[in-house]
Image 1 (cartoon, rainbow, N blue to C red):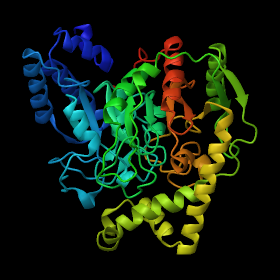
Image 2: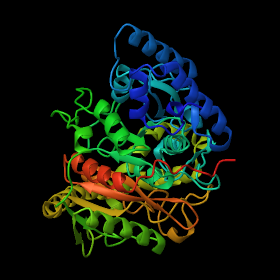
Image 3: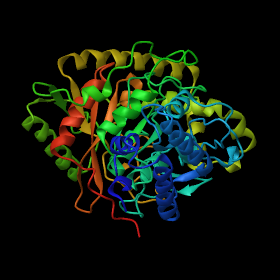
Length: 469
């Protein structure tokens, strides 16, 4: 196979080859679809395939280039879209049997933008039901598996996005993150995934969790994620929270120096219970940043008490309210563990709910003040490497619920801060481990410059999953 059509080529390398006419968009998309066919029976990454749409978009890209026209920054590149993000005219199931035949009526802003930039959507990737679990299964699509070990989960809820990118189907994917659903799967599958500043990427139609939800990229390289984020970011009047300022130059940030950056490090945020192996691997990565010229500050006491109750109150109450009629009339179609979690959230009193809302804004101010003394906070992304499939909550976290065992990610949905997962190593059993990078408000560029500097001296893109048969 031509090296330019290697399944694990970066998006930027493919784009260079496309624009120099060394390969065609149709060839790139056919290669992507071939890889999809090769791995799908083992991984179960897609709820809906859009092969014809992808090939038509690729043909349009090729014809445009023959006329001397470049469609945009993603010209001819294959991509997938998570089944929580609307692609007009295509099935949008949210991973639920109750929505099995639902057809999206409009393109989400992120989808419209990748289309306009020349991308070719090969399929709709699987999600846990309504994005409510930190593992990758749903009653509609079944279990999605991790290409590093098919007995392990790729995480949730952007399970299909993570598994397919890690397996080489596409160089990047669109996922969502309401409490860690881009970052945790990225950690479990060896990807770089980022949720930008809250509302940097507009969300429409409105999410069930409108002040927590993010759309963002999962990619095999930092620069590919920067490329995709630069396309999907920017104001959209349909999202009342949408950031109106100019989009930062994320790709340029990847070349910025990091010497002198102040990086805080917390292995447990003051309350988490990570495996010792995860702490060892992530702490070693922190020392590599120190070798690159960064100042490392140990954040004693972490961020204080666990803010899980604030997140649980808002996230699941929002989803439960949106699904009230479904829970009433089609309860038997839903994942029982999701139903139980939503029932608990809906049972809270109005007083209790708003007490948590007010606590959240106090927490946001606490984090804003804390972050004035450093550029980034570094933590493990997840407390463990990928657990076995078919397990909603790993046994060592029996006191947590279906998402809150992911201690490290949800605090920064509450604050809206940019946060990413950076691949930094592997366990003794060969499973990827991610380091979370959390930036100040509106400072995604600090994440990109630090992540790209780490990637330059400790690259991971050449490490290929060997868990597939």
